[in-house]
Length: 172
Image 1 (cartoon, helix red, strand yellow):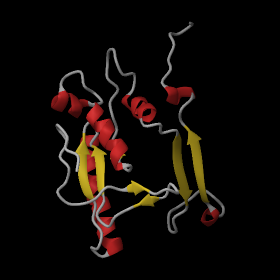
Image 2 (cartoon, helix red, strand yellow):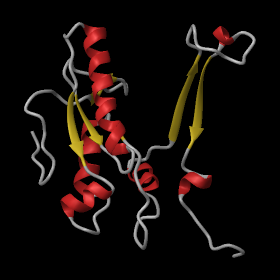
Image 3 (cartoon, helix red, strand yellow):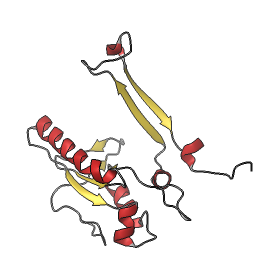
């Protein structure tokens, strides 16, 4: 297993891999990298992990378990790697290698360098689709006449327009 300078790989668990047909091979104990995030990320990420762990335990009766691996970006990265390192190459390497990951909200650094950490992640990892499943859940109030018929997936391309992070001075 690869070792990293600042990232601790869990002693247990395996990587999710991609099969030849591009489907995912998910082991019973996958290692999932996560970026805690900045601001509210420090509050919501630990809770998200507890909720996901509880859901996996309930759904699989304890037969499956996620092993979480923290990777760094944003403010926490500057504390671990140095004051100007907002998105370390080590983090990008892990995200590429482990295929599936999750991140909390990230701040946009003030000053030169990166315009947006979210845009940088999308561009570095070639993440071009924002996938949004929309489904009605029985018992939840809805303004729709027949909400039970709501079941769709929205694909939003996110490499152009505001997602590209290309900015110009006003009136240029």
